[in-house]
Image (cartoon, rainbow, N blue to C red; front, side, top):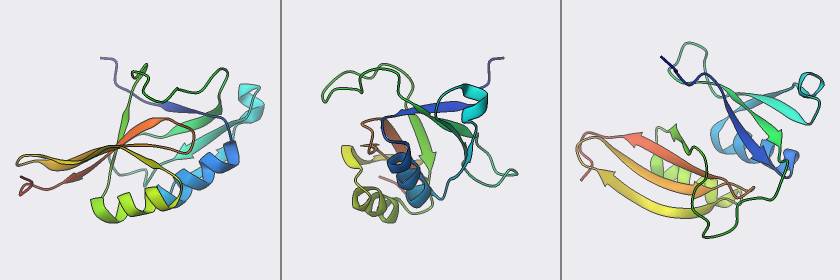
Length: 131
């Protein structure tokens, strides 16, 4: 099986991206630039015993996504405990709404945002009463 074990988020401004993901989701970072030969920061996304994977922020090597451009890659979705509080934090840190909160009936609340670097990501709050 090809289970996803790592992700990379391409960024233009490393400090801005670390601040965004650190403050919005509590991620911590370790400088792995010497291994990668470019600005590259490993991201710890939560407790090692919790479900999920870790990844990295890496220096973008080309043009950023353009507004309205179709997604060309993977969209990561982050599990959150409180959708509305997380959305408020995302927006206060410079993120932008891409697709408003909607119900996955009987399962969860879902929505999509753009980070400070123009990358699309989702947030997901489990809720069996979502309608």
